[in-house]
Image (cartoon, rainbow, N blue to C red; front, side, top):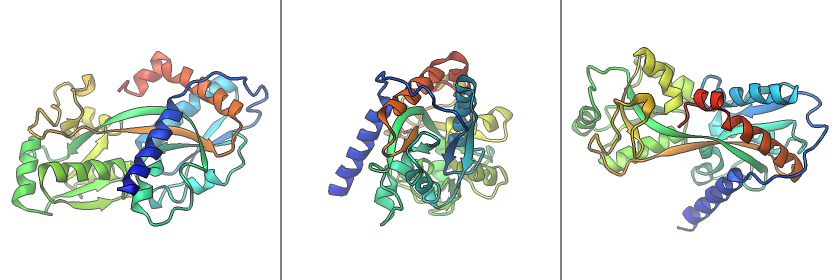
Length: 292
């Protein structure tokens, strides 16, 4: 119970800090050379896509490149220490999913970083609803059909995730708990790799952030069965919510945040906060982030 309370306190603290948009004096000479943005996941996934989009817009605003550097593996434990140990000068930043900053504490006995002390939250970049997707729509025509198959043959269905403790993993665990089924977990180093194997027919299903799955839903290569949201998305308006599909209490969103090393001057954090917040409020970026 104490661990859960500590984890909740950590998550709420990070979200509150990321939501802040307090104005402050800007660092007038920053940046005067390229900025590195660490993504502790492979290229092509949801976090990587958002980091590159924001990086491109920040380069246009500041006149300096914001270069995404993918340091994938070990559920963030390779990439995050790079940021934790970097100079707190604003030239090494990080785009991170919530799980690396929250649930990792309860999954791994030791972490090579302290989620609270080693990072300075800048802002939240996006909220993303999770969606249940499959490749074989003939075999799984609905969430009900998939649920029936999972109940009939425990552990026979394989689900891909972007790693232990990832949002994809937590969504699947929630599904197993609420629907009272057992499936087999197949972890990957990132969401893009998980989707690739689903497209190849090597796994049966995936709970994915909607923006990550959406390109494949549009081409028809993947099929969405249900959305883990309290209402339908206009982007996939024909896809029911989990509640509508007959599986209640299945709502889950994951956030992606932008962070700097701990000890980064407050004025610099505030400058980045204002600049990124303005970018996120622009209509073209909202559209590209799927505005969800």
